[in-house]
Image (cartoon, rainbow, N blue to C red; front, side):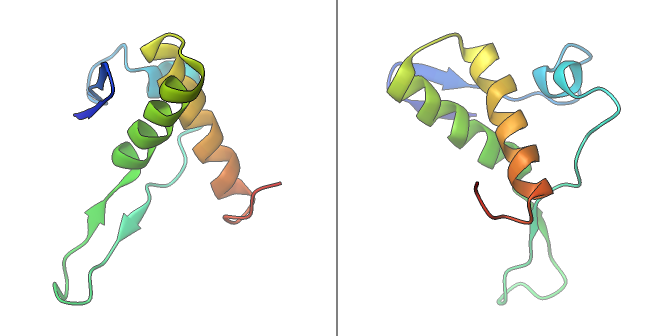
Length: 88
């Protein structure tokens, strides 16, 4: 859960009606995983956190619907990952 301004984004990607699943059924990108140096052998999937942060920024700048902002954020992250992390 990420709270930003007046909107709280809660991602439950296990739910069948998840915006991430609905918008990208069958096209889910690989998760974004970080491996902190000080926690050898541990990895953290930050995909949902990144999506929520992008959605919060979209909401803060442009308003809109929280669910649609999450769908747009997922699309933007997928596009960014597909481009190798380089924005157009």
